[in-house]
Amino acid sequence: MCGIVGYVGNRQALPIILQGLKSLEYRGYDSAGVVIVPEESGEELNIIRSQGKIAHLENVLEDYSLPGTVGIGHTRWATHGPPSDANAHPHCDCQKKIALAHNGIIENYLELQEWLIEKGHSFTSETDTEVLPHLVEEFYQGDLGQALQEAIKRLRGAYAIVAVCRDNPDILVAARKDSPLIIGIGEGENFFASDIPAVIEHTRQIIIMEDGETAQINREGAIIYKDGQPIAKKITKVDWTTETAKKGGYPHFMLKEIHEQPDALRHALKGRIMAEENGLTLIDHDFAGINAADIEKIAIVACGTSYHAGLVGKYVIEKMLRLPVDVDIASEYRYRDPIIDEKTLVIVISQSGETADTLAALRESKKRGAPTLAICNVLGSSISREADQVVYTLAGPEIAVASTKAYTTQLMLIYLLTLHLGRVFGKISPEELEVLLEHIYRLPDQLQNLLAEKEEDIKKLAALIIDWGNAFFIGRGIDYAVSLEGSLKLKEISYIHAEAYASGELKHGTLALIEEGIPVLAICTQRALLEKSLSNIKEVKARNAFVIAMVFEGSDSIIKEADRVFTIPDTLDILAPVLTIAPLQLLSYYAAVMLGCNVDQPRNLAKSVTVE
Ligand code: M6R
Image (tube, rainbow, N blue to C red):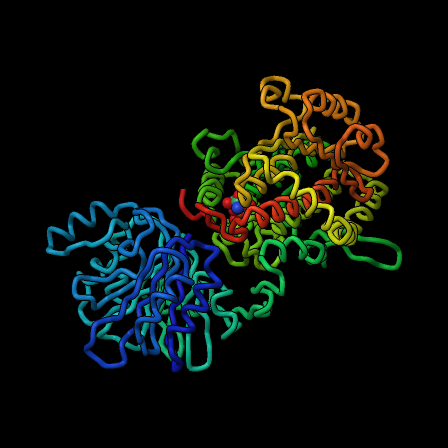
């Protein structure tokens, strides 16, 4: 929800911290701040904070000189207290001796605050975070690490905390529970960060901190503690390039990530479908740990775009395996007393692997004895570590708030899982498997061609819809699931109000909103349902809606009826979502650009929602 960067080294800390914060802006961008340890001992910590984006903080910083080689930065997504200078992090203790940045929520902050006020501490912000430096101050007896360890024993909630103290100017200390934190190991310099892109320009050697761990870094290295005792941790070498984490020449991360989808799909397939001389083979090691024989039902739980991928999964798995699948929004799931047991495979889907509701749903499922499988993108994320098994989408870093390549790769993983289970259950014959593998294997190239061929047409179409404050997306079956994702994309980044309906449901109320010229995006790829879809298109056409249809080539009846048509390359009906979503992503993107919206960081949103 927020982004933290901490630096200890021999270079000037401020530019390194600001550059790191910019790569974490996707985690929150309503205010930002830095603390730099002064070079002269005994001086107060330099803390500068400002409401607004990091670019604004940079302007503010022009009026200051902050030399120093140790510091912490923070970019915030407000939870407790609105965005303001006072609520921005880092926060400090009464004497301005200890400062820290925090990501997460301290649930018992009111009771801690009361206790601290009784002890004479005073507060200057409305945040839950501000109790933390005061709590550390309360326990500080010359050792910052120990004081932090004492402080976190009193906390309820989620936190990644990075702290500094004027009296221990060469170290940073940190603690983690339910909010991500990594350590970057450099040469004569070390880092804390909420995510890898913040340090990738300086090091690829990463230690992923786990829940319950604390750590201390100085110029020489890092020590990680569990229950107060030093422990050995594995250093992971990440193979991202700096460029991977940047825009690669595109004006926005979202456009870059839309165009990365063919490659992301190829990555997702690598080592899972092998092309050999005698044809394609499914390599399903990744799913081998699932005890398929014991599964009587599947429950898919996720939020937002990942939830929409789960809905596609329901259609695919039920159709191909005749196995019942429930799909739940994670924030609803744990409070509705879900009917699951050890014979229900619970699949949690999450790009970030840190979404609080999905994580809570995963924990609830485990508590009830269900086997769990995570489909995740972020390596080492909380969800990927806590699920019984994890399969990675391997889409690479997704920076834009609007999820694109995570969705298509999630779909890919769902198809592969279905093939695996189908083979184990004997529901997919070797002949059917061969056909499915061939079509799946072709998808990356088909998507690449589609993106290359249709982008200009979609730009023109975006120009036609931006003057409308509303749009409708309709579809039947699996196309309905894609409609939901298409409408979310449009709302999220262009702020055009969009609703998705199962085509047959429109006439039960929503048809009243159809008026002359209103855009209706009709996704009609399910061949057996084309006649029904045509009737629904006629219903809105009769009210003079402007119909944009998305079909396979040859769907002539619909092509004749629609005002604009996008054809997608031929594939199996169940695989269509991988292809139909791309034009919808581009449509939303260009509509948002034309409307002057902040595409990569839409208002009120954050990439990773780590609060309930
Ligand atoms: O990281 P997750 O996949 O768990 O995130 C879930 C949603 O917050 C996310 O998909 C959100 O809906 C996207 N901004 C949509 O583009």
